[in-house]
Length: 296
Image 1 (spheres, rainbow, N blue to C red):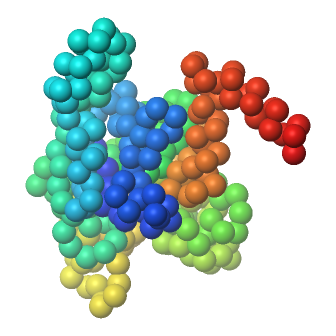
Image 2 (image 1 turned 30 degrees about the horizontal axis):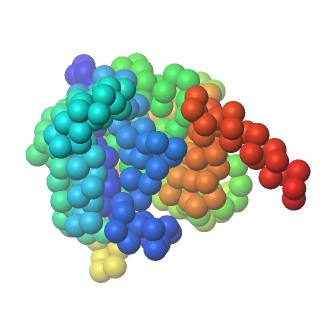
C-alpha cells in the first residue's frame, strides 16, 4: 500500500459570497487572526505527512503563490530590525512543503481540479482539501482519513452529520452498508439532494476526500457525457467507481467541528473563536466582548 504524500487544494473560485472583499484578494487568503485560511489547511496536511501540495488556482490567485514563497526583502528587513520571531515564522511558511501551482482548465465543477493535477499525482493516492474551509478535529481530519485508507485500502470521504435541512442543499451525501458506528461502505452518493427525504443518509461529505488513482478514469468518462451547462462534480466519478464494484468508504469525522469559512457568518464566528484562544489577544478580546454585551 502506497504512503500518502501528496495533496490537492482547489483554489480557483471567485469567492463571490465575500465581494467586494474578494475582488482582488483570494477568499483562501482571508485572515483568521494572523494566518490566512489556506495556511491552516496546509499546516494540517503537513502535520499528517504530506510532502507535495498541488494548488489549482485561477487568474486572481497570485497572492497564494507569493504567500508560500520566499520573500528575501522582507526577511532581510526583519533580520536587520532584530525581529527574529517574525523572521522564523515567515521562513517556516515557505519550508512547509513542496508547492506546485496549476491554472484550472476545463468545465466548471469541483472535479475539474482533480483532472488538472493528474500528471503530478500519477498513480499515487492523494488527499483533496478545499482552501477556504477546514475541520477542527482530534486526531486531525487528515490523520483520520489516512488511518481509514490504511485500514480499508480504498477511496475515503470525510463526513459530518447534517444539522439542519439546509445542509441537504449544500453538500453531497453518502449512504450504504454500515461497517461500524462511524464508517460506511458507500453504495450511493448524491450531490445536493435537496431534502432529507431525497438523501441516502444524514452523512454530509464535507471538506475532505482521499482518492485512489481509479478516480481519473471515471471522471474522464463523466466529462465526456456532460450536457451543456452541467458541471463536472466529484460524485459522478465516485458513483461510477461504486457501480463497478471499486470500494469507497465514508467516515464520520470524530471529535470534529466543520469550519465553513466560505460562509460570512461562519467565517466571523471562527475568527472570534480562534482570536479568543490566541495568546496575544485572547484575554483582551474576551474582556472587550463582555463589555460589548453588557452595553447592548
